Image (cartoon, rainbow, N blue to C red):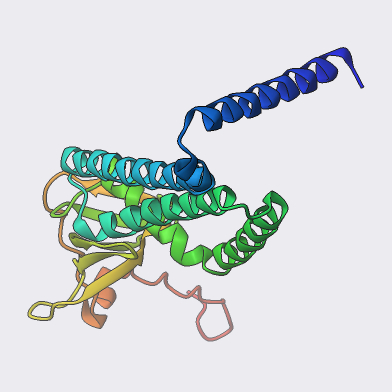
Length: 241
């Protein structure tokens, strides 16, 4: 054992002894009826303090999230999972601290925590596609590569045409486009996963994009075709000039 570890262990032991001695002095100064309840009053006060701090922390974080959503104009659908995640993290931490104050072994708490963490990790990887869309939705609302009303085109590469249309809705899973190439009088919608937006090239138009070129008809193809080259004539005994 190094000198630093020995010194830290010795300091911790001295602090524990000091706390025990102060508790004994406090017991001697209290009335007898309160001494019997002291072992209940102190843990109960600590539990109440933990619950109060957890409630205050949750209230503060929800207020910060509300201000951030008002600043970045986040939709209400995105605030619900964020507030739920904050609430459950605070509740889980408060429950662990309360159980520790009630005398539950730290080893048992750590085993339970690692078990829940393992299950959470497995569920996270199982729902990775859904969670990636949620995270990309948060990026779309904060980074704002486009907004509702813009005309965009999602391309595999910059040379090949892709899904083109006007952004009409952005939710937690999909970005919905009004298909710009649909036939006249027919409205079509393109639902693009949010994760796909950050994996492809996105072309953003300034204004309305030009209409798609109409498909060439057979008559136009024949008219625009280049004239065929004349067939060379092989000289023979009957066609000699």
